[in-house]
Image (cartoon, rainbow, N blue to C red):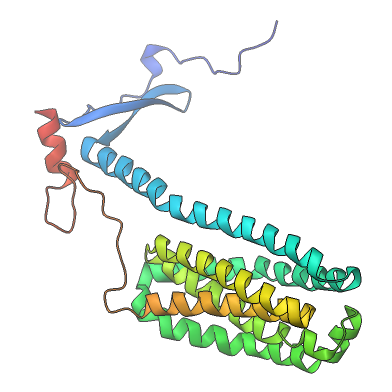
Amino acid sequence: RLRSPIPHRPPRANRPCLPPVPAGIRATRPAVADGLHVSQQRPAGIRRWGWALRRAGRAAAGPLLVAVAVQSVGNLAFHAVLGRLLPVDGYGALGAILAAMVMLGVPLGALQAAASTLAAGEGARATTTRVLRDVGTWSALPAGALALATPAVAGYFHLGSALDAAALAPYLVVAAMLAAARGLLLGSGAVGAVAGTYLVGTVARMVVGLGLASWYGVGGALAGTLLGEAVSLAVAVGWLLRPDQRPHLRPTGLAGCAGPAGSAGPAESGGRAGA
């Protein structure tokens, strides 16, 4: 016979005595601690505040999800049109370079997370200039090395000329600064601005990139990709430098939660709930 994984409850005489539940504190859901079924106690005001924050987080993530979906559809359409505009060898070389650009997103994701954490702790207004300056300075070093190796890169990817690979070096700097700027926006709560950078960059890449690719081939497509990232960076920096920057997610309609308007705190609301 299989043994039950749930430990047996100790005899009543050996159970630890739990403190009495204060007034205004209500049980939420049962939990298991040390083999005993106890109740997790939280003030009612804190529970309402947490629920409102979760609702606000879901509402704020909506525009970002829509923007990322639009960007994905735009990338698919971009490649579908380029597949008809470019010859087979040209499109293959372009796909290899764009895949290398996508690989840069892995370390840049960590940079974006670090910038978001910094903005959430110190504020985006106080860190925007310093973060963007440092990121631009440090990313210029590998970009300079990549610019010196442009002929070798063009030969490795079988491009028509070294000018076709000239967009890789500035793309590295712009992509790094854009990741930092988006992280600062996310840390300050400006999720809509981040979504706007995705939408604007996708439109700029589609219009300019496809137009240049029809005339200049692979080099035009790469230049359009660089321009799309630059336009997104300009939108993000412009939002960060606005005088009324640093929006806050403030749940509304909360009774008895400590907020900027001087509403009642959790303890006071808990007392009223208990009364």
